[in-house]
Length: 383
Image (cartoon, rainbow, N blue to C red; front, side, top):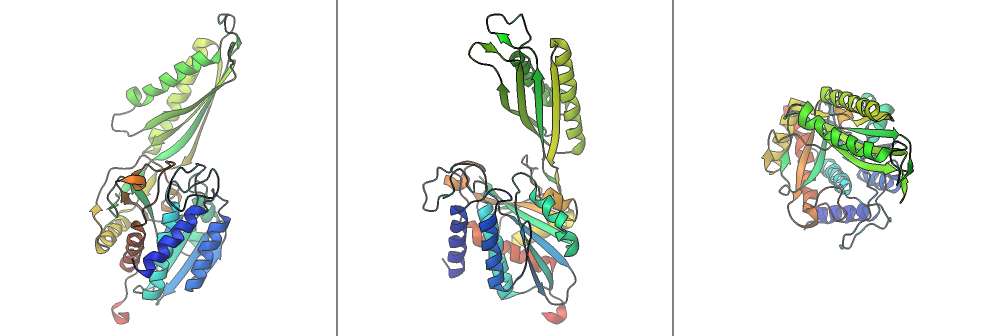
């Protein structure tokens, strides 16, 4: 292992030991800012950390994003760098994403090989969808006049370093729904006296399954998932109120709108049939992520130049990404990079025993360098 690789592994393990939740990444931001300054990169600190590296006279700028936040999960790993923050862990690999981008910054500072401006975007709060919006609101895209933007996310279950993406819709949206059923609770021995909310809720959960199976086209790619069922009932008390929560993943804005409409229709019908009140909340926190063709083709070329296996036009992913806010503003590409197929590196994202693959760190850094050289090429008179 080279000294460069050793530095990346040491940094990643340090970040893994000290995970922080969204908009609470105080230590992580300091580590990132300090490292960029050590490299001589111009640093701007706001809700996130932005590094700016200019070389040559080119007037184009590209943004490279890494997310920094962790998840409210208690780690059960047995390796030597487990989380020291109880109930918080890097279960999605953002410690690795941050390290790969810092590694790329180190190499680009020392090697150059491009003409233009690289903007390193270290983003908070990806998991709850607020970080990209906050950075855009601060003006990172407009003030630095970024022309294109890119992001990598590791993918457990895929071969180490495999690059995959697609033009067009690459990640689904996420909408959170909540139904509140208000009926009349009572004694469990006399259900006929009131209208208890639990049975109505159970019927509602089953009815929601018909949205995907019977109301949308089979290839719509929509997922409707009730995830919580809460009531005020007790051992011998029929609940008068029930709350059902969950999320919806969709691959097109029109499908999102259709799902919301069907949910409200189902709730209205059940409320009328049972004589209860059902209120509906439907909120979209993550919109669909769309890749532009030019940046996506560039990502394929960079993957090949970095020696990676490249999977073009992969199927769209059902998970969601707030990177969508960036690609809604400027052309860009969100791509996946294989994290490995076995052991902790092959465990699903958000698992308590998941771990980012250290072997991916130099591969990711190499990819970023190749991408910068592709999008900000040296002019013939400067080579």
